[in-house]
Length: 224
Image (cartoon, rainbow, N blue to C red; front, side):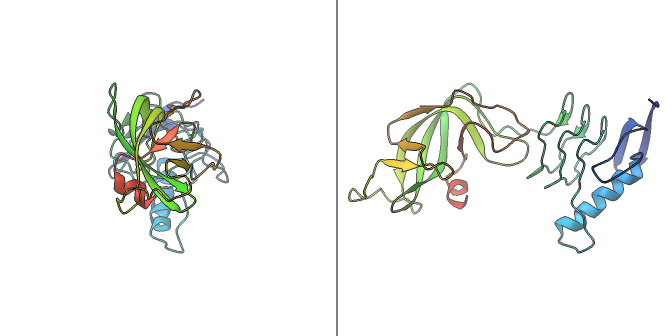
């Protein structure tokens, strides 16, 4: 393996091995200029420019890369090596970070959930009559993620149910105290019930994984 090289390109600094393979479909050594070009085309893609291309950095070795403030929204970083990378201020919304190596990476403060204490969250669910917003007490371990504002917890208690307009659930509804998950109809929520997921996944790289999902604000739950 060749030795590492450090190069500066504007505000971006990259430090990685010279024999790095780039993203799928990209052959040969990935140089700092290659990565700069990928990010420039990604910006065009985000702007819906026909010349733009989504950043495909699957398996890329970006160890030590300075990506401070980089716009990586929606980028594919599956299994990318981001050890020691500077991702502070980077926009990772909607990025695919599954199995990416973030050991030692400098990350911006992503955690939305208060730690080591109970707090309130909100969730949209279904009923036979329409959408419902639940007020939840979040208990036990919980986390947000690097790629979005949806949070998840291991254990929650359903405190209240109301319509998206904030009105109480009418008593004449078929099941005014029982509601179904928007993703799994067989998973039910009941007012006053405490639910727990045994195989809760605390992986910060993933937004949609095992856990009881919720938002920190009621408006986010309504808009979801």
